[in-house]
Length: 348
Image (cartoon, helix red, strand yellow):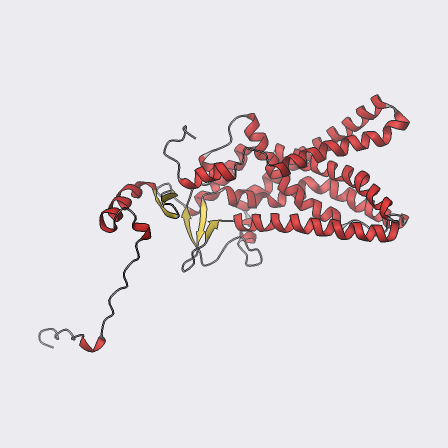
């Protein structure tokens, strides 16, 4: 972080330690492993009848085709949705009270995000940044996939309807995954909502993005558990486990591969361009960047950088070095009975 034009604030240092958008987490590694494992399971299923060489070639070609489709549709849909969410009708949709993205009575201040202060550079950082976007979008679509699962996998008519629905979900997954692109733009922006009279403030869309991720994560676990119980009751435990460890993992792998291709086809430079355009909707060039600065063990100040030194110097000179621990004395009460009215003006 020494390449930055100015000293970074504490929020950037802590973000680097706790949330690094250029470092894969264990869940994202598991997501990439799921894509590979699903392909290997598919190879193992067809290798007995077709041989190793043909099985490897066939599955490889299928996955290449899926990723090409995902990249083609994703490049178009993710870019269009991003543009419409910043300079189009979708921005008005997100501002609607029906979507908890914007707070109507909030004031906006500029706090440059970690992504703005540390833009992705190099091939690996750009790939990891896209993987994180695809992981969140894939979780979003995995939920729909599990909701489509039949209770009875032995019913041929039900399985036919399920197969058609899953095929449609796979074909449209690059486009559907783009529905979360606005949240990526908003949360990576420098626009932070401050609600008068409340202590809490957060980047636009960040609260919804985190809430959605938790809801999808826990919701998917509940849906998977309930689906497994239903299939076990109708088809037996062994059939349910086999269905989840074969067909389900293969379909999740295909879905994840297509969404990953869609995210990789959405250039990060284009994403950052729309982030900057979104910033310009709220701020001018002269609007300062507010930054978190630690002033004591458990005290922070949020202030524009150019005012920090003078403000802290004044506070320490007036209240002492540990001014964050000092209690502000209550204002003296005014007895209205002892207040004299001012004399009337001349010639009254």
